[in-house]
Image (cartoon, rainbow, N blue to C red; front, side):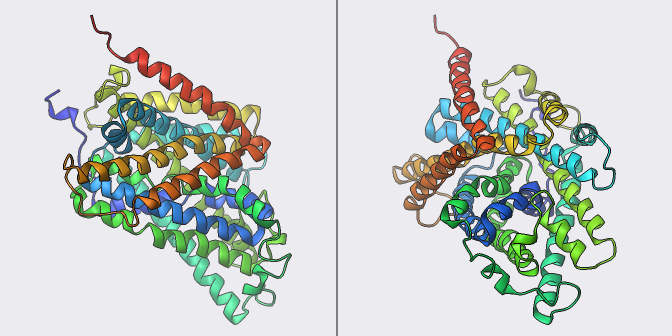
Length: 452
């Protein structure tokens, strides 16, 4: 198509991209998933977040180099097709769409769980449905609306975590307030040691840790709608290590220093628990609202990214042509319609198995994300080979320690996948994965035009 409507509008400004990059790293994986992870791994969870953080740093630097080479909305699916072949591009695009569709199911589940803090008798599926419908409606508006909404969602999360860290450090150092007498960094090793469950517990925690990091790659999807991508995208990807240190490791370190990890409830967000214990009037209520905001933010991002990915797949002839158009606001409305319809399965699951749905869907979502991260690393390594051979232009923003870092990080992602088999609730992802990838391979060859 040659009409202007065939192109996404570059209406995401620097502040939008920066806060989307921040917001993408802070979701229910941290606010809700960390509760069970702390219960299982104790302070050793910090080691799991550190290991996962190193892997994410290299993944994002590899993506950043590819983004500055060619900033496109298809991002990793486009790079997979160019540097790994059309089948890899097809699988990557559809798998990323699948991962975010299932992730949104987890996010709306969290909204249902946390709304019961105020209304205990409300069925878990009802707030999940309402949240999905509201965010579905906002995503059909101009991309600037998404950018503004995500900007404020992300800002709320960032301010909250910074406030927790500052207040927590003050309590620990000056022994102030109700938690002051027992708050100490020694809580990290004085209740069964730093690794109370051993290294195996740390490895088992990698599933929720890596799910918590899901969304960092969203900055790649925004590339096609970013103003001045050559400047904005490297800044967003380069800050990932700071975000990991502050918002994950820093926040959890402070939480487990304020309260012995053995006192934290695996069914209650540690953020809600600790703010309530700090004695600030209404603190637990405020943090509960922030956690709901975090879940809504991730749901918002999921609807954004799935619509763009279906649009990209249709543009390349790898998806139904119905998804190739844009509405008057230059938003891929058809892809958003279809994605939201599939996301309704999450509402059904909240009705049928409300107690198990969160762990089940987060592990299934992680499979698609692990594939996406892995293909970014492989595509980057192949891109570097293409640059060396003179077949591709070098990018100004380069990933360090390549290609060794590529293969070591890939090995780590394989380890995370293997660990999914250890827990019955996460094991379901390994049952879904071969079926999903098998269907994609069949779908790819069926969709290919026949010669003659």
